Length: 481
Length: 95
Image 1 (cartoon, helix red, strand yellow):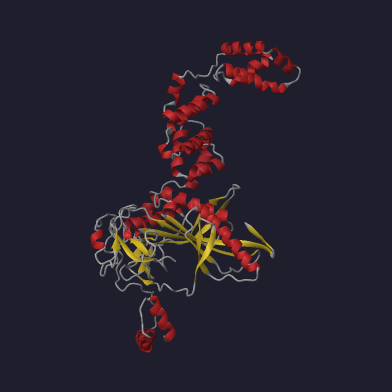
Image 2: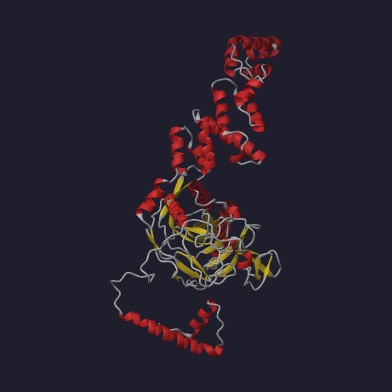
């Protein structure tokens, strides 16, 4: 996206930092439950509460999940990494410091390929992924002058993923967030629910005149908690900076907050000194050293990821790039499709899935996991059309009955007598009757009003209650008109 | 490296420590004494020494992913200056 300013063209430079809550049973440095939604302060150990003398112990599953995610980001896994303390005082951090990784993160540089609306792809470089503990949850709306603190989230494992400043438009950033969410969900390392806060995003944005090579000071936008908000925030912030520059002002490095209700960003604080946090090596945890066996084991058990699945669906199941991209974004949808398409025409199953099926789920406000129509039954429906048992038109009615009852389409077709009539003699009788009953239209057609053709087809299908095979109807009309 | 008055105030601010004005000079001296003492390490040639981040030459041993602790809000909140509905209650901290 190029900004057209009064002074010329400007480009957007944007990088993202994404915090992903790690899926694990217990917290990263304590044995309290990492589960969301418990009563206040019930999932808390003395380590999480920052009690004196308590020592952190690293959860092996959090390490495994981080390595798995790193492999999914096609990134370097660092066999040697270290933990550090990031020091700051805040009510949501009882220890007075966050245990994180600073100089030596567990995962280094990687790359994520994003899919853009015009069908093109772009590689976004990953700078690093490190693991750390989440802070507690503060609730501000229970009292006008007090904040309420719940330590349940305090100490839950997080992966912080940092990209290079590779985004040039809000669309690219949006496509990245969708792709990342898809990857972590395929891997089962984070549930990716941005609206519940288990995946959170900060965006760093600067702009510069097109052609300039130096980076200008950036604004960091905190807490843009949906793909849509991230895109809105980047666009608003880029335009705000353009206005500042073009009216003679300067941008200073600062932190801003996105306001979802207005779609704008507002000033939070200036970055006064870069080393506020006084990082130092965590004395309670020695360096983390991973073995080749540990990493190889994870590599061997890696599931098929969205890009690989997409390529396979395009090559072996006849899907277009567009279909494959949409179907593979969500693991459950991809699995449903694969089950439904087994033994059937993949492209036709995809059309039903992305058309009537998704529309039905939307209408009923359901997700694919609780769809009334099973994958097998959707496949069978396509097969009934393929083998000319029912017409495409009748299939739509059968589909609606399936959506209501969850029944097998073969059973519905049998019970309701919807089998397509392929008996030429029976169809011929209807064709003859339609021709005999409409002499004016027949004459008009023969005198050159060829668009009446469709009307005849419609009449015959109507008379047959949609059961006549359209191909046979057409052949007979050719002969008789 | 020498610590000046401004740095003493900044560190006090970051550490949430209240240092009275008449104690600043004394604190500044103490900081500098400590730094001078530690500064002796600079006399050692460390050009061939790998940076050390932990004094014990041990590797980190991980723990299994099991839930052991929890359901003890009463104990966790025991030292809270103020609590309500099992939450810690603090002065409002909205930015």
